[in-house]
Image (cartoon, rainbow, N blue to C red; front, side):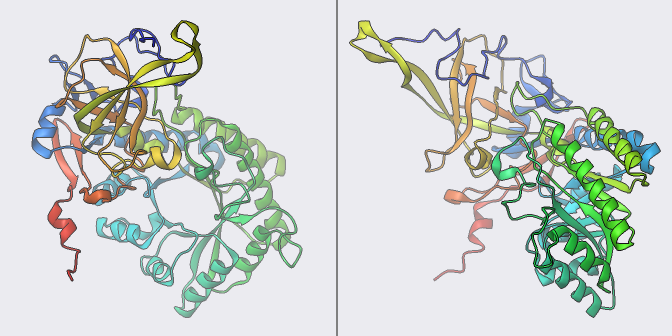
Length: 490
């Protein structure tokens, strides 16, 4: 058998993963603005070392840089307002509540001039408790209950994004019975392919979201989208605001966004002319990507804004129409990189793995084997389900100290009774990582706490916000007592 030189790349590593020149260095796009090494070598956020956070709040722990969150929110709002100033006077930016939501975040969103996108009654309840004005809130979802629709009307939401013809009728009937008008946008599927995982691509035809723009998809020989426009315009309980699309999530390539914007503007212009109606708003979605690994290259907010504005400007000029009011939904791009998860290392184990196709004649024809180290931490798939759901890649760094040791290919795994309980599939960590060390996994602000579970009866971690050198819980971690309180006994 052959032994790998730990200073060179492992054949077990994916092609994109390079051996870092400095295992102690941070890759800036992956981290919040205030995260850095202090003089003692410890990772610190807002000047607070991770050891202090562990001592005060325990691990696992989601650690969020509040100032970074606010800066990213402002960057999208300011950049899109500037790019669209001459087109429609600015842009409405909706924060994706599904990515991470609590009352503190809702207040930050409102204070930074953003609006809030929700997708359930529970998310509406958080919005209501935080006190955000209903007109600044949207409700999404492909299967809204009557209770959720009535709550949306009670809160006087600024928009209900309707996802199907049957839902459109139901929304209108509920509003009419209340003697009100529901402010509605129609979610369309423009048939645009998004360069992302199939489970988070949402604008192709064969999936549960939206109204198809494909021709002749209804009994009337119309597209479902056109039939919905006509039905909404005719229903006395509906105030039709405009159209909405969302092609997917964690997208870096700009082509899909541009094509979707052009298709929706052309459709909007055609529908306004054919049905003699006005649709003053157009939501172009979002789902912009963030850096989970060193090879991810997210686009700055200003670059995205300028590219989208150019498409809207030229298409409206070609069609001879006034631009509708544009809104966007950046998704994880606001919250994702604001947060890292802090774990404590427990068990370590190194196994030898065959590298397929590497036969060693001098070794009797056996495959050459290479070491892969398993680094177990005190969380796992219960606080980050994305690797098992989407094969999502993450990175990790030794957080409690620096190390001069050589890099070793490692797999960071959780403590659950599943072989698929993987937090970071492939990462180079120092050879001397040991039990009791702290690891930090960046980019966990979106869809990690939100997807967390109590699998194996682990309590969900807390979320700490750090700002101006102080840390406070914005979501309390669960206790075993919390879990047992719902057990009703025999």
